[in-house]
Length: 495
Image (cartoon, rainbow, N blue to C red):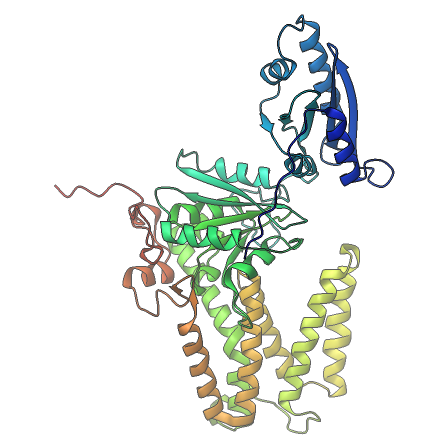
């Protein structure tokens, strides 16, 4: 049951409003980043409220100077509220009627002006969120193409997309999520393209979020919307590139942008959305197709190389002319399965250490990993050279996966299949792969099959996945999204 909270209206007596806000916000030594300034112009008392950390001081000074200029050039015959509201030089000026909204707006970075004798306040949007300049995302680098990327500023992120889609039908709905954090969340879509039912469902799920705050921003929103539980496979696609976000908007997807996050959420997506990369679309069709197939091979290797190798070696299924891929010595001290698990743990620990290691020490960390952990461990007899080789190749295949989330999910699958192949042999491996495929085939992502266009099979969609189609021939949007306008360009005239 939703509780209706009664809002506190703005009083006509200015002192009552100031006392209320000072009491609620502890303005002063207990809350130094909330500012308050009392003014008196043309015999009218007024107060300005703002957040020091979200509004630059020169902006506040300029606003007060603007107010002085307005009042100095008028004789006071007009109502002070109307005079200031109509003569402010700032672009975004609006009214506000409740003290609860005053608190929310001020803590979002807006300036609030309250005037004695008026039960309506003036809101001036001059906020300036601290942040960094757009730069290329670390995990989605391209050789050719734009080098800008999303930042932690939601306004800048929307602007980066708007720069690429200058269409009057491009919509950005702003919502606030979190009772305490009040995080700005934007739903972006093309009004005449997006599936209305999908949009309604996403909007409804976000509005139903009832939590004190979402400091983890987009990840928290994903968990509230999809509720995927223990499923390791990513149900949304994250991107830090505005061109990738714009491309998906044009297909009929929805973009969710959360303030303070340098990446955006693309929904809905299938498994095959996570194996695409912007670099494929920055090259000619043949090169893009080759790059995609090499990436497919790398992903396949990351999942199935180790399970297949231990299956063939441990259960003696190798033909005589392929014995060279197995252990060259049989007097190893640790079981192969235990060696593989140790190697996987070691690689994962090294990855975690690299993330937390300062850049200046990363080279030293690499030398330690290569020389001490790799070479010496082999000489001591903890690992076989073949185990290190195949574990490293599988890890490289995981890093070649465009989606970090998919790479981690594939690693979990690889470990499970390796254990099944080692313990139960061929039946364990076959059953494990079968369960893996059936499980993914049954997953639904916002009523969209996760393995589309493979299961259920769609020839056009499957062709677009296997071979990167040239832009002039990509005339139809993905049918699985059920777009209102399914054509990306006018129908060809055969007459």
